[in-house]
Image (cartoon, rainbow, N blue to C red; front, top):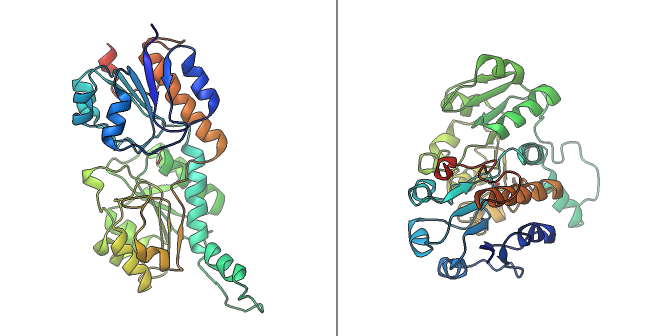
Length: 329
Ligand code: GLV
């Protein structure tokens, strides 16, 4: 009998077909967001699971799903997965890095530009019928070219954003990261490491790209925002919870910074109600990686990992982006 796998959310039909060649596949074509007990019920008898960045895979779930051998996510961020607990139970975990880097950087840059140049705010004005004449200072925002770009977190996506800023827009780039890049990479990106305070104080446009963990919870709160220039923008494309959304909403309302661009939110899909009322914030529903080719590439990478982890396909036994490959050794 073929092993059974579960796909937790609705995906592209050919993704399901790739898995059906080798496995009994249970799908969720209605795209229901299962509760944890529902997820555990659907996982019974499954050797592998295809997840996204939102299903929590924790100790309690693992204890209730003893047949599970592989958890393959189509997201790059894996703060929803307790990787050490999976490793302790011999469960292979994979994420989906690299394939979304450039698409996500494009979007981060777009969101930063939209905040700086007041694009959604001015579009709402036009659509509302309020535009009756050209005005010299209407929606006059901040320049992006030549302004100082601050990157908080300098992994793959942070570096792709830095490249766009330095090479495309002539921006001096500052960054802060726990580990500093080597000198050659810094030089190629035109990026300078600074401490977090300097980054906050000196950036005209701050883009946040750190992974979420207990250590990065509220990494940017009221005290950090207070260090920023009143003319600055803040863009978060990383994870909800890294920015204290209540503190950010207060700062935006009081014009202590100029504008923000947010693709991720604490407690999403709920959004802090005050953010919804503010004109100086651009809000998008966690879509930074959502170009069609990239979402397809992410899903295909999760399938490559699932096939390999469960011992089939050309990469069998060697999932290409495993986070704990040692469990298969
Ligand atoms: C999206 O947020 C991801 O982690 O892939």
